[in-house]
Length: 133
Image (cartoon, rainbow, N blue to C red; front, side, top):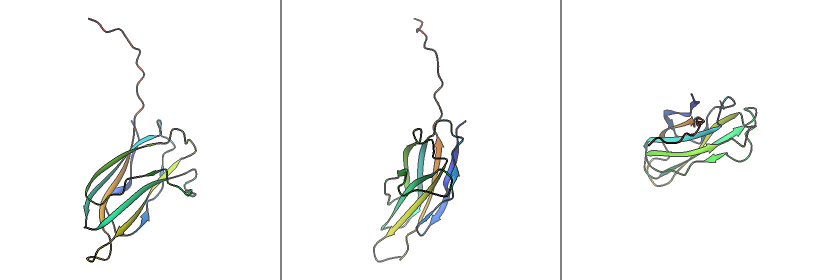
């Protein structure tokens, strides 16, 4: 069974820039994850930029994200694949988000969202047999 974890728990209200806590992925078999960002509520004239950062030790996160989700403005679900199979040194991941707001109404942005990583399972190896007709 693959690993599943929330980098941002569902229903989290974000009102300022921030980052989540580290999640250990060192036990992952495939090191490939489907990343799902689900926005369930927001106000007009705002955007969210969400990224995934990696670390060897859970302390040093580098200068560049591993993956940037597309910038979003409205409710809905966005999915991307994160493949760390060539980055064996990465043992921890965390989410980081930046919010922007423009316009004349409320002064602060507000998104309600969740961000989940689900490990893609390894394909089972099957011996190929001739079809029977």
